[in-house]
Image (cartoon, rainbow, N blue to C red; front, side):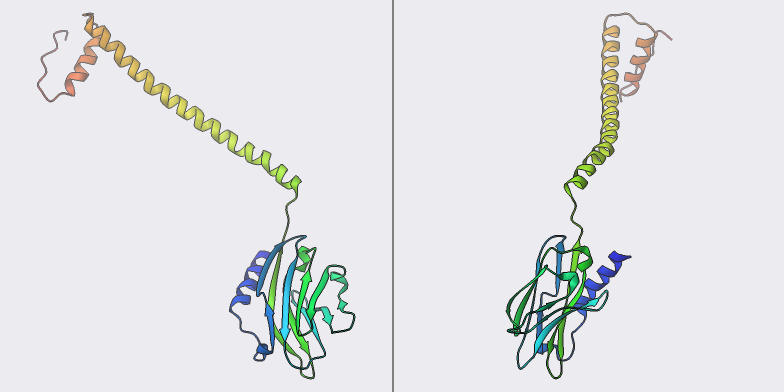
Length: 209
């Protein structure tokens, strides 16, 4: 269910237009995918008079992530405490989100605070689970245990097939030697009849019948 929601969110991020006044707040990137523990940057820029800049998370639950105002101490939501840094000014601000967690997955939008606040397009953030070394090591024996029986079965099949071909060739060689020696037993007669039947020229009657 979660993967389906993420797929839908990624699709909407690419096709949905922003608000009519979105040209006043520019936000990038539109989509970012990262693993747990990594860092991402979201840049918000605007022009004109403004009191400050807010970045909100609008999905899956609405919340204010940061409030930034020049020459003032920024406000950061407790869920992101110690994990957010800033570069630039409120007109062109880059928000650095570090030590990402799966719970950070969502849609984030920048809003310029002024008499009539305006909001830009949103950034979809997808945080993937980071596999530990123990997980990789636990998967290796499973892959070996699955592939080993298949390899053994194929090996037995090929060995049996090769042995069958070799036995057939050896048997024909032995029969030819036996017939060439002049010992016309029943096995030799059958062999001669079979080889004769494969020829297009008429066969001479078998004198042993």
